[in-house]
Image (cartoon, rainbow, N blue to C red; front, side, top):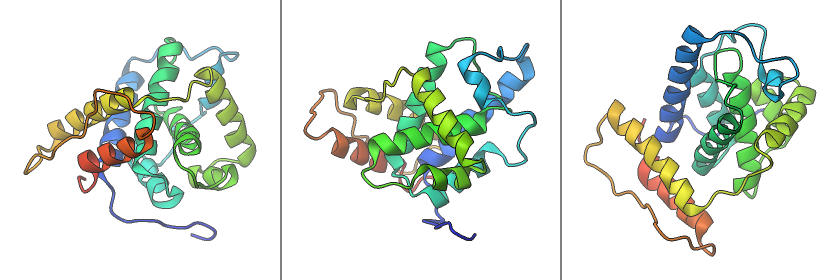
Length: 206
């Protein structure tokens, strides 16, 4: 694919389990979805007119292959999505908005978590949207979470545990791996703790 760099073919567990959670949530909400979000609502920008032909799993795997994000970014994106939905209870993830929420939350995460990352134009290409839309969605999403991007080590590990549990339910590990869940916050090593936690729990599981 011209102009895009493919990073890796092996899809790690964190990507697989996150796609499973979001696919299941979107399918459930599709079945019960009532009236659409009001046009003036912040989440209306994420609402597409038609369901994308690419599945959530394939879309997330595409992001993984081309965006070059650290594994921690996918956990952070999951946290940001949860924050958005908690702040806007009238909003639900469904097939018409989940892809845009996904690419936008990962963009926000990669800028906060990773020191080196691609720009918005590249992410727009990966996500299959125009740059102007990517920029607009990013701003809308950040306002939607009140720019609350900070994630404590305890919170990060808590969400890791949620994803880990989901992964184990899908396919029990053999043998079980240790989980580096810290119960004390150490700001001097929070970034390192996050990377270690994700690698111990998810790397190599698919």
